Length: 192
Image (cartoon, rainbow, N blue to C red; front, side, top):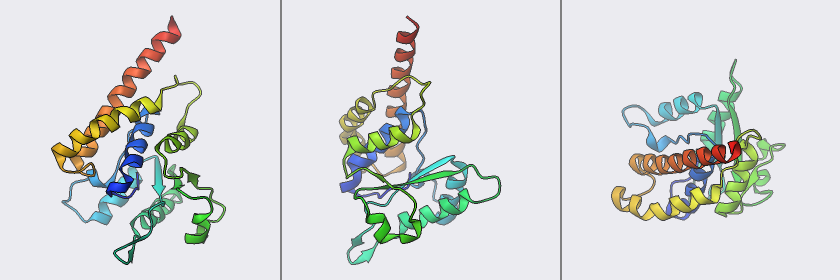
């Protein structure tokens, strides 16, 4: 997950975690990595270990007069990884507004970004379209999102922020646990 770590993005952060966990994937993010080595090395190693990466460029904007380059830079690392010999890495770009990617990063023309319009439910729909498996039971992704939205204040209280290693791990664990339980229930229902 290559996403901005700021308070306005929290609803989409929760939706991304909910969607990925609900679709049977394990979200990874740079914020969970220990700081014992250079940040760039940690990010690059994480991208190489992941089969997929999603990059939300919807908040690449000026912050205190300075543009935010981290998300496009990490996208470039993922693209380079995907082109390496024997790589199976796949990457996707998320955006809030249609056609903005063509203006802000024209080198990616021909890449269709997944447009979420800044809406958590649309984020779930885009992720479901990418990662749903026809043979897997359908998991109600909005239910997982609702659980994370309910737990977010307690996580924020405990860790001071959702964008901490502990906060991220707690959210992923809660979403994965609910997703696994829902998947088991769906499989039982299919068998009966």
